[in-house]
Amino acid sequence: MSGQQTISKTPPPPPPKLSHKNLSFTTFDDQIVKFHLTTTPTGLKLGEMYIEKFPSLSKKSARKIEVLSRTKHRIDAANHSPIKLPPRRYSHVQLEAIREFCKAHSGTIIRKSASPWVAPLHVTRRKHLPNQSKPYGKSV
Image: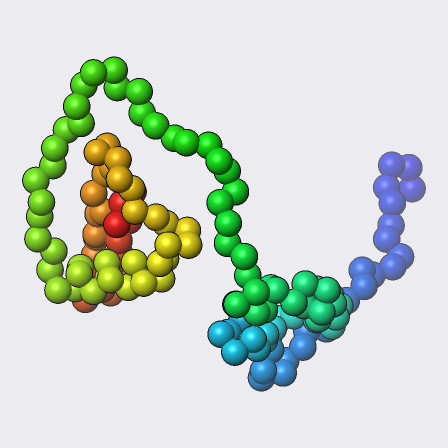
């Protein structure tokens, strides 16, 4: 058998998956952590170890949100003033999406800008859900 190799061993079977109905990896306000249905026993042990070692991962009140960078971002436009955009009205669906977006990111990740160069918030309709809108953009 020159140049050929035969494999005498079959590969090991994949690790078993847990199928308990209360397994999902989600943290809630009441400090409950649930793991995914597909979590392996090893992953479950590691997850429990991390939760024990880092309790702030599951406790919302213990999470510290701080500014990671002290860098000030600015646009050097010499002596030119920014382009003004006229205000526009949003539909009721769009306003609800904007309110939900602002509520979800209330000062933690997204902050209002006082810059005259800030871009408006854009709201688009979702293709698969025509009665819902999705906000995106640089300002709220």
